[in-house]
Length: 371
Image (cartoon, rainbow, N blue to C red; front, side):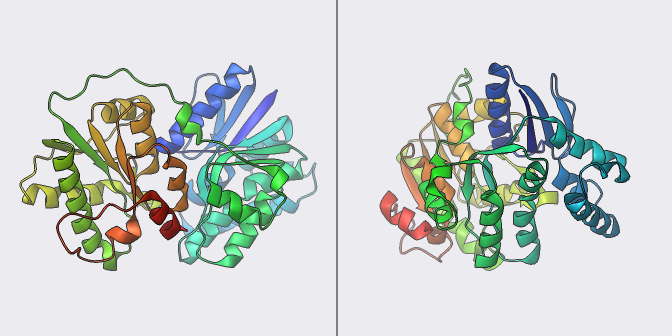
């Protein structure tokens, strides 16, 4: 069977890459022929790769007028009668030809149907529906692999995305809140809960650091007005956890650093590291693994992890490293049976604590707060 993955990731988000590589491996083991449309595509052995349709329209050329023109062409292509697509630009026509030629379309899982406040965020969320819309234009079966749905900053974006998702034939979700949210809009028979695809990544053999080491991941998520309190409280948590777990070294790890897509982990990682150094902790230079295997190696060397990046926690779990998860969205609930503790960002950004130790909260309370 010929299968198209229309929403393949770029090279800078190792969590998304782990999901993608696991899906490709699963399909190849079943002897399917795979075509991948990716952000910032690079050649892959044994797979035909093209730019994905969203990347082609919005990110391949960042000139505003080109973006507007390409988005208009994309909408035109969506409503253009089948057989007239040859009138479109060659690269767009080649992308659409893949949709026409495959037997099935499978969307990679992840957390792309969500939005924070802001017009761009709403566009980003809604644009993820175009993969499904083009698949259905050419009457293809569509499956969405384990994903999260929401949260959204407004009901309109939530409704539009739900209507787009409803066009898929089978939808897998990786957490129960996403399942509950989507059930409001579509038949429960379409929905099934499965673990995040990255859990199927194979463990990497690695030697631990000679000294017990606590690692951490952090991301630019908290709004600027609350970031100072968040960083101080995060530093408190890391310092106390290092003491509790008898870790003498701190190892920051940058799982994602793509400031061009508003994912600037390296900057905030260095800010947090600086606070820890001022407190007298021994902090190594941040590691920036460039592949899933390199990430597994980096996390596998640790004795413990405080992880804000969800997939840093999954990598740690695969490598049998215990962790505390810092939850900023309901997708983290999928980690609840694996983690030692789960602490909401809402607690860490809420101002100074009564004492230096950040109070650990029970998982149930955290889940309620995330909801």
